[in-house]
Length: 221
Image (cartoon, rainbow, N blue to C red; front, side, top):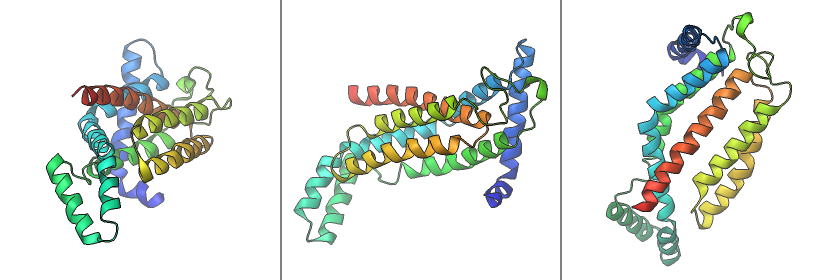
């Protein structure tokens, strides 16, 4: 983890600076709050990365829609791997789907995710404004465990939304992830600073709304 911190230090410094600017914005508005600053920064980052997220979600939805045809081809050519690969390639070409298209947007977003993690993990909050809502300090864990629960619940809802429509082996994998990921995220959130968990929860809510409208538009088409 320390290696990642060093490798992405310029981006981490940028994110830390953006937190400071967002806080100064709340000061100018007459309500100095690091909590509000983190929420504003999260929305800003998600909005900047929205085109990549949209591309990723559309690719995932297209692959889910092809699951029945993929299963039929796997059953038909289960004893002929070469023919199966050829037929799968032809199907992807016919439908205009690239099975790797969903990976690139995620890879592009990873430096930002790593940077915001380190920026908020070690951010030097002004002690006079470190409190937010029920939280005594954004630099410490949530003593009431509300944020870890919210992080787990929002992750579960998002995984349910993402996995809707999957069939066969993909559906089984989705079911496992729908259990594992929320529990994992909730568990690690117990030891994360509250400011970082707020970022995660707000990011999840933003993407839930984004995915809802994207899926609605795709289903209408």
